[in-house]
Image (cartoon, rainbow, N blue to C red):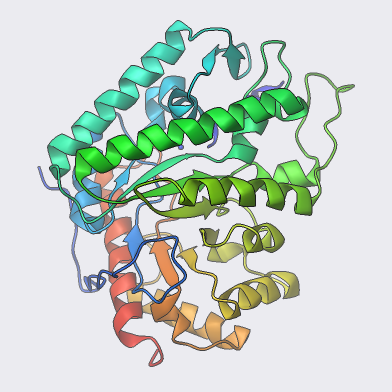
Length: 369
């Protein structure tokens, strides 16, 4: 694979909190992210933070989104800290190691795999040291089954998704590993756990835009219905696990595939508002909200509009969709969509503070924006 293709496989990434004139905090809800019942908007970190200091990152997350903190990824520390490595570290009974192009399955864990698992354990210790041992809820984020199978290679160097047996083993290992991981987090923080499944490669899998080992190794497109069924079954298994408070499917990296989102309820679907353009996207979002689907919406850069201006933009979009404006207070969460890597933590804190203020405005003023 080329250098660009290598990037495809790995994109699954003092009190420094900032307050300002838009510092309206959200009203915490009674339920959890995966429930369809009405619940006040919540603000949360998308799960990727800059730098190499987990304590500093956890401090910012707590300062701005303390009602719903995320155990973040810090991928600037290298491959062992990326989302694929973390997900493989969670998988039960799966050996893996770093290969020439990507992470690969292996008969036994390699040195890089052990380092990834050790780093993950230290990160969780750092979060607990920062947040304490009792939270209202906590979020963990891992690669979802579709993107994980697309990103990881078999020992022979082919994408796991091209091998039905290897895919089943990997997805099964992720389910069993998540059960243990969620249970450990619930005991550590004495709270329910929301599982965010990042699916950055899902649209490429459906479109057949992933390359194989060579120009002659063609990976065919996967039907939306097949991918939706696979992800829907996975969500069903995860929501049934003890201590799971909800599931979030991250489709924010591309125009959301609404047919897949429809098969993953009760999971929340993360979207970036910048991708909601054109009739098909507007119709898809409108149908999702009208059908009771909860969405988490990213709204832009910290140097852009204020939290209130963003709330007004969302209200206008909802009006264009011809749905009840109160969905803003009942079916919408908000998160940071800004590129975080390479930015100072103070800027990321500012992004999260705007997101928190936006959630508060939606909770109080939906219907009057």
